[in-house]
Length: 471
Image (cartoon, rainbow, N blue to C red; front, side, top):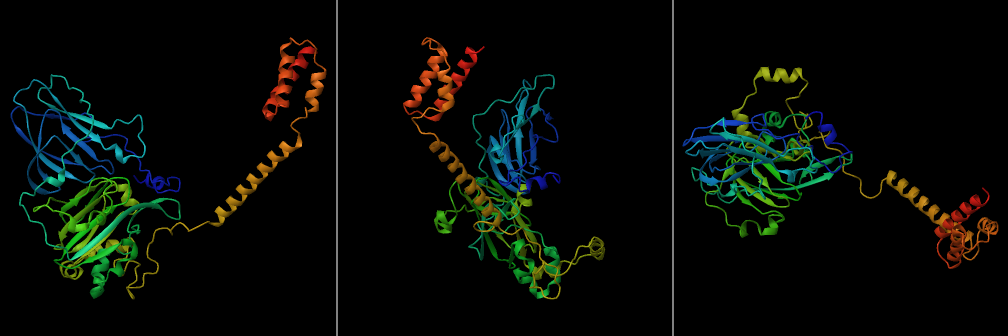
């Protein structure tokens, strides 16, 4: 990935097209076999450890009974297939058949809607098998017309934890992708593309004293939000991009209380909280997929002091800046954590500062001069380079028009060029000669007011005739 990042974050990739995987693997192979016995129930736990592609997963001829997602046990829910984004986890029970008459494919199929390009040589599917009898054939997977995965928003937590009360703080994050001044494509929450601080935000919390509750000290480009201990926080994400994104929160399993359909617009477009009916016991997990130009709403209680990132778990979008920082109960965190001295010694040896604000300033924590920042925005209007290019383009266009006009006026429409007339005078008088006819036809066509291309054709015919006559 280190080799691909400079290519991805380049002016030569202005659309932000993500590198497409070379293959799909299950347990590091494309030939996975699970030996099973008839009439038994197995617990499968599936983790998408990929950096990019979501996966559709199904077991031919078998049902899955979901019992856990992202570390949260759920009420049983039956599914034929599931969608697992990058970073998502799911556990399910699978009961085998009562006979060993056949083996059955296990299919993981990459979500190709995420890809800007579809390499013709890439096999999007990885196939394994539930093996009842290794001596019997391992059949190919059947083709499917469309994917219809289980809707994880319908899951109910096993503990049936009720919907949290109305939020004390609402954080709205609008997602866009755009270019900055270096020509590369970046990702933004609320027009801010993440840039890591010179001092990690956790160290800023621990060295800032009472100033730790001031979001400004963590820097503009960490996109920080300070949360009070115990408050109810609601995150509203509006996806203004045309792709799916799996959003992940560190430190919490949030309640997923709303997800719109594709192309639904912003949450406000749908009327906000007042126009929604939330589940009494919403699904909890830590990674949720948002659909293209849709929205999601998440809710959690700030009961875990720490510095927690919220980001898209497509690694290319992490690199391009689709992250925000939640600084949760910072004064409580100061009471709970002490950094070991050997840890600080390692940081010192590496030249990594461990105190101060995002810019490394330990004197004035509100002085952020020198903080890490993304490239400047693209300049508005025309740049000097653009103006020069425009001027030369206009000059070239004007010269081209002048040349065409000069050529048109230089030769009257009813006058035969001397070279053509001379060739015609030298030609034999046989009216049946094909080239004479061609030349004469050309002259008549010219006299009839056709364009210059016909004169060129006639001239060529006459030259050919003269060459024939003198040979």
